[in-house]
Amino acid sequence: MKKTVLAIFTFFALMAGASAQEAQDTHNIPAYRAKGYKGNVAATSLGLYWNGVETSHGYMLNEMVYLGGGAGLLIGAIYDPLPALRVFADAQFYWMPKKSTLTTRLRAGYLRNFYGESDMFNADITLGGSWGVGAKYGISLDAGVSIIAPSEIQLASFNRPAISLAPVLSLAFEF
Image 1 (cartoon, one colour):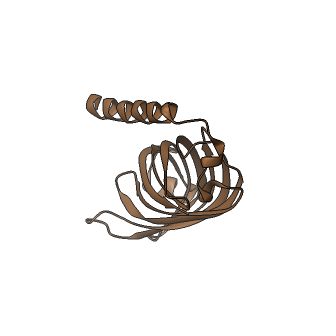
Image 2 (tube, helix red, strand yellow; image 1 turned 135 degrees about the vertical axis):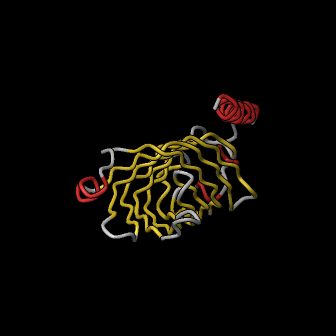
Image 3 (cartoon, one colour; image 1 turned 90 degrees about the horizontal axis):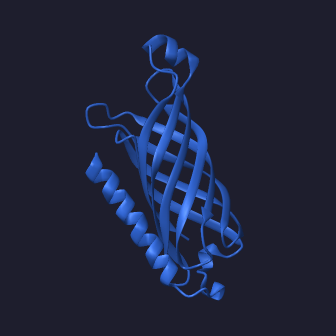
């Protein structure tokens, strides 16, 4: 656990250092961060249990704030390979108007595991980085915590806790 925390801290310290060394030229913002349409496709691991592909599409209010919505298909682990559908609202904040910067993301929505009555509220809070690749594209890496709250039916039938926390990791191609 200590090694994982140290690795995450080192990643963000290096990212902050790289961002601090860039020039403050706001005209160097990639096209995918310009005001207007923006989208991404991500490989996501939710709770180290569900792994899959998600996409989010929305609007850049300015070069630092994104609002959108998305959906994804996640597949359970090998011992329980049932799919889950996730639909969510997505908000992302880029910390600096630079080509490479730290990011904060909030996703909140609905997760439906096709395993009987498994409807869940789901929210992710992540911290990550975004790197411009050329003028039109970017790559982002986010890590954080996912809050999962099962429906009342699932709570009663499976005797589960009201709220579960799980790690979330996402690697996205931004356009």
